[in-house]
Every structure is written in structure tokens, then in C-alpha cells.
Amino acid sequence: KNTEINQQIDINESTINTIPSINKLLLRSSWISWWIQIILSVISGTILTYANTVRLNNITNSLWISGFSFSTIGVILSFINTFWTWNITRLSRRIQLNKISTDKI
Image (cartoon, rainbow, N blue to C red):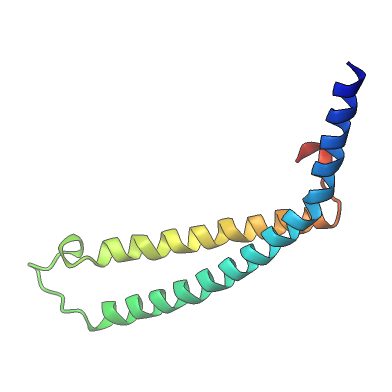
């Protein structure tokens, strides 16, 4: 029974020792992902705004048929996903600064 407890303690210590390396990987990948998402979202939002200004406003061309609404929804979802990635980056930073105890991870 004592060997089981010792093995469990060893596993917990090794898990705690791997947290900084996993956290570093999470922080790096979330920053890269955040920047890529911001750049692509701004570019697509700019193109969508330009496309809306030069679009012909016919009665037969509704917003749903032209695809403008779907692309607007896609850009909005892209910005929501960017915000979500920003929160992951902040969580990783908090773990790195030991503002979150390792017991909760």
C-alpha cells in the first residue's frame, strides 16, 4: 500500500514539473494564433466593408442571396474566436506568474 502512495506522489510531482513546459508551449502557440487571427480578421473585415460599398443594391439581390450576411457572420465569429484566444493567452500568463495554484490545474 505504501508503494502505491509513493508512486502516486511521484506521478503528481512529475506532473507538476511538466506544467511549466506545457504552459510555455500554450503561451507561445496562443500568441501566434492570436496574431494570425487578428491580422486575417481585420483583412477580411476590410475587404467585406469595401465589397459592401461597391455592391449593387438591387431589389432582387437580397443580403442572404448575395452571401453578404454569411460573410458578415463569419467575420463576427472570427473576432469572437480571437477574443477567446486572448483569454487563453491571459490564462497561460496567470499560470506562469503563479496566480493560479497548480492544485486547480
